[in-house]
Length: 207
Image 1: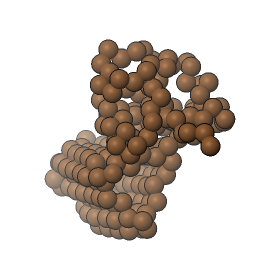
Image 2: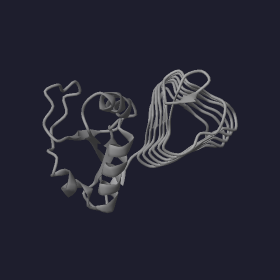
Image 3: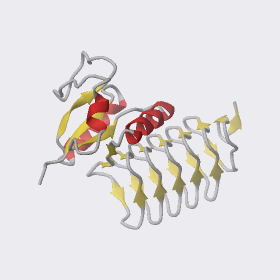
Image 4: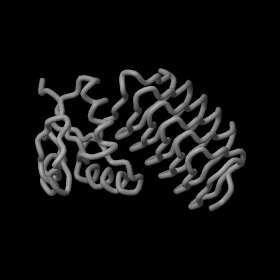
Protein backbone atom coordinates (compact mmCIF):
# COMPACT_ATOMS: atom_id res chain seq x y z
CA UNK A 1 0.00 0.00 0.00
CA UNK A 2 1.39 3.40 -1.02
CA UNK A 3 2.23 5.76 1.83
CA UNK A 4 0.19 8.96 1.80
CA UNK A 5 2.21 12.10 1.14
CA UNK A 6 1.12 15.65 1.80
CA UNK A 7 1.95 18.98 0.20
CA UNK A 8 1.50 22.19 2.17
CA UNK A 9 -0.07 25.00 0.13
CA UNK A 10 1.42 28.29 1.33
CA UNK A 11 4.36 28.69 3.69
CA UNK A 12 4.12 31.75 5.91
CA UNK A 13 2.11 32.91 8.91
CA UNK A 14 -0.97 30.70 9.23
CA UNK A 15 0.73 27.92 7.26
CA UNK A 16 3.23 27.41 10.09
CA UNK A 17 0.37 26.68 12.49
CA UNK A 18 -1.13 24.21 10.04
CA UNK A 19 2.22 22.55 9.36
CA UNK A 20 2.91 21.97 13.04
CA UNK A 21 -0.54 20.45 13.54
CA UNK A 22 -0.08 18.15 10.54
CA UNK A 23 3.29 16.97 11.81
CA UNK A 24 1.88 16.36 15.29
CA UNK A 25 -0.83 14.24 13.62
CA UNK A 26 1.96 12.15 12.14
CA UNK A 27 1.44 13.27 8.54
CA UNK A 28 4.45 13.23 6.21
CA UNK A 29 4.94 16.57 4.48
CA UNK A 30 6.75 16.17 1.16
CA UNK A 31 7.23 19.92 0.84
CA UNK A 32 5.39 23.14 0.14
CA UNK A 33 4.13 25.04 -2.87
CA UNK A 34 4.27 28.84 -2.96
CA UNK A 35 4.75 31.61 -5.54
CA UNK A 36 8.38 31.89 -4.51
CA UNK A 37 10.72 30.00 -2.24
CA UNK A 38 10.50 31.13 1.38
CA UNK A 39 13.58 32.59 3.07
CA UNK A 40 12.24 31.25 6.38
CA UNK A 41 11.92 27.48 6.59
CA UNK A 42 11.18 26.48 10.21
CA UNK A 43 10.09 22.94 9.32
CA UNK A 44 12.89 22.29 6.82
CA UNK A 45 10.47 21.54 3.97
CA UNK A 46 11.41 21.21 0.32
CA UNK A 47 10.22 23.91 -2.08
CA UNK A 48 8.18 22.26 -4.82
CA UNK A 49 7.61 25.34 -6.94
CA UNK A 50 4.29 26.96 -7.77
CA UNK A 51 3.21 25.95 -11.25
CA UNK A 52 4.44 22.44 -10.50
CA UNK A 53 1.70 21.99 -7.91
CA UNK A 54 -0.66 21.20 -10.77
CA UNK A 55 1.35 18.07 -11.55
CA UNK A 56 0.77 16.72 -8.05
CA UNK A 57 -2.98 17.35 -8.24
CA UNK A 58 -3.75 14.61 -10.73
CA UNK A 59 -5.29 11.44 -9.35
CA UNK A 60 -2.73 8.73 -8.83
CA UNK A 61 0.13 11.01 -7.79
CA UNK A 62 -0.17 9.72 -4.24
CA UNK A 63 -0.21 13.25 -2.84
CA UNK A 64 -2.84 15.15 -0.90
CA UNK A 65 -2.89 18.89 -0.31
CA UNK A 66 -3.05 20.69 3.02
CA UNK A 67 -4.27 24.29 2.80
CA UNK A 68 -2.11 26.75 4.73
CA UNK A 69 -3.68 29.97 3.46
CA UNK A 70 -5.34 32.41 5.85
CA UNK A 71 -7.24 34.53 3.30
CA UNK A 72 -10.73 33.11 2.77
CA UNK A 73 -11.03 34.21 -0.85
CA UNK A 74 -7.57 33.00 -1.89
CA UNK A 75 -7.94 29.72 0.00
CA UNK A 76 -11.27 29.08 -1.71
CA UNK A 77 -9.90 29.84 -5.19
CA UNK A 78 -6.87 27.60 -4.75
CA UNK A 79 -8.98 24.80 -3.28
CA UNK A 80 -11.25 24.94 -6.34
CA UNK A 81 -8.26 24.96 -8.70
CA UNK A 82 -6.70 21.90 -7.07
CA UNK A 83 -10.02 20.05 -6.82
CA UNK A 84 -10.80 20.73 -10.48
CA UNK A 85 -7.45 19.15 -11.38
CA UNK A 86 -8.37 16.05 -9.39
CA UNK A 87 -6.41 16.95 -6.26
CA UNK A 88 -7.33 15.58 -2.85
CA UNK A 89 -7.69 18.17 -0.06
CA UNK A 90 -6.91 16.84 3.40
CA UNK A 91 -8.47 17.85 6.70
CA UNK A 92 -6.07 18.65 9.54
CA UNK A 93 -7.27 18.45 13.14
CA UNK A 94 -4.70 19.22 15.83
CA UNK A 95 -4.45 16.40 18.40
CA UNK A 96 -5.12 18.96 21.15
CA UNK A 97 -8.43 20.07 19.61
CA UNK A 98 -11.70 18.72 21.02
CA UNK A 99 -14.08 17.61 18.27
CA UNK A 100 -17.32 15.74 18.96
CA UNK A 101 -17.72 12.45 17.13
CA UNK A 102 -21.24 13.67 16.35
CA UNK A 103 -19.93 16.59 14.30
CA UNK A 104 -18.60 16.69 10.74
CA UNK A 105 -15.57 18.51 9.32
CA UNK A 106 -15.37 19.11 5.56
CA UNK A 107 -12.39 18.33 3.36
CA UNK A 108 -9.62 20.91 3.25
CA UNK A 109 -10.54 22.33 6.65
CA UNK A 110 -8.22 22.98 9.60
CA UNK A 111 -9.03 22.73 13.31
CA UNK A 112 -6.32 24.29 15.49
CA UNK A 113 -4.94 23.52 18.93
CA UNK A 114 -7.42 24.11 21.74
CA UNK A 115 -10.47 24.54 19.49
CA UNK A 116 -13.70 23.02 20.79
CA UNK A 117 -16.42 21.70 18.48
CA UNK A 118 -19.46 20.30 20.24
CA UNK A 119 -22.14 17.80 19.04
CA UNK A 120 -24.04 18.14 15.77
CA UNK A 121 -21.85 20.90 14.36
CA UNK A 122 -21.36 20.97 10.58
CA UNK A 123 -18.11 22.54 9.40
CA UNK A 124 -17.92 22.99 5.64
CA UNK A 125 -15.03 22.57 3.23
CA UNK A 126 -11.83 24.63 3.36
CA UNK A 127 -12.65 26.27 6.70
CA UNK A 128 -10.37 27.44 9.50
CA UNK A 129 -11.44 26.79 13.08
CA UNK A 130 -8.62 28.61 14.79
CA UNK A 131 -6.83 28.37 18.13
CA UNK A 132 -9.03 28.09 21.24
CA UNK A 133 -12.23 28.99 19.42
CA UNK A 134 -15.45 27.41 20.66
CA UNK A 135 -18.34 26.23 18.50
CA UNK A 136 -21.34 24.93 20.40
CA UNK A 137 -24.10 22.49 19.49
CA UNK A 138 -25.79 22.45 16.08
CA UNK A 139 -23.82 25.31 14.53
CA UNK A 140 -23.32 25.36 10.76
CA UNK A 141 -20.11 26.82 9.33
CA UNK A 142 -20.20 27.51 5.59
CA UNK A 143 -17.47 26.59 3.11
CA UNK A 144 -14.36 28.76 3.28
CA UNK A 145 -15.25 30.47 6.56
CA UNK A 146 -12.71 31.37 9.26
CA UNK A 147 -13.48 31.31 12.98
CA UNK A 148 -10.56 33.25 14.47
CA UNK A 149 -8.69 32.54 17.74
CA UNK A 150 -10.81 32.75 20.87
CA UNK A 151 -14.13 33.34 19.08
CA UNK A 152 -17.20 31.86 20.76
CA UNK A 153 -20.27 30.66 18.86
CA UNK A 154 -23.21 29.71 21.07
CA UNK A 155 -25.64 27.00 19.97
CA UNK A 156 -27.48 26.96 16.64
CA UNK A 157 -25.38 29.70 15.04
CA UNK A 158 -25.08 29.68 11.25
CA UNK A 159 -22.05 31.27 9.56
CA UNK A 160 -22.16 31.80 5.79
CA UNK A 161 -19.60 31.00 3.11
CA UNK A 162 -16.24 32.79 3.30
CA UNK A 163 -17.26 34.80 6.36
CA UNK A 164 -14.69 35.82 8.96
CA UNK A 165 -15.49 35.80 12.68
CA UNK A 166 -12.81 37.86 14.43
CA UNK A 167 -10.69 36.98 17.43
CA UNK A 168 -12.49 36.87 20.79
CA UNK A 169 -15.84 37.78 19.26
CA UNK A 170 -19.04 36.31 20.71
CA UNK A 171 -22.01 35.22 18.61
CA UNK A 172 -25.31 34.82 20.48
CA UNK A 173 -27.25 31.58 20.18
CA UNK A 174 -29.50 31.23 17.15
CA UNK A 175 -27.89 34.03 15.14
CA UNK A 176 -27.50 33.69 11.37
CA UNK A 177 -24.52 35.36 9.71
CA UNK A 178 -24.60 35.68 5.92
CA UNK A 179 -21.98 35.04 3.25
CA UNK A 180 -18.80 37.15 2.99
CA UNK A 181 -19.37 38.87 6.32
CA UNK A 182 -16.53 40.28 8.43
CA UNK A 183 -17.07 40.39 12.19
CA UNK A 184 -14.29 42.38 13.85
CA UNK A 185 -12.23 41.29 16.82
CA UNK A 186 -14.09 41.46 20.13
CA UNK A 187 -17.52 41.95 18.55
CA UNK A 188 -20.65 40.85 20.37
CA UNK A 189 -23.28 39.81 17.82
CA UNK A 190 -26.86 39.47 19.07
CA UNK A 191 -28.82 39.67 15.80
CA UNK A 192 -28.69 38.26 12.28
CA UNK A 193 -26.18 39.84 9.87
CA UNK A 194 -26.77 40.10 6.12
CA UNK A 195 -24.44 39.11 3.29
CA UNK A 196 -21.39 41.19 2.34
CA UNK A 197 -21.34 43.33 5.49
CA UNK A 198 -18.72 44.42 8.05
CA UNK A 199 -19.34 44.74 11.79
CA UNK A 200 -17.43 46.05 14.80
CA UNK A 201 -18.05 46.75 18.48
CA UNK A 202 -20.21 45.67 21.41
CA UNK A 203 -22.98 45.41 20.48
CA UNK A 204 -21.98 44.88 16.86
CA UNK A 205 -22.65 47.82 14.54
CA UNK A 206 -22.09 48.16 10.78
CA UNK A 207 -18.81 49.59 9.60
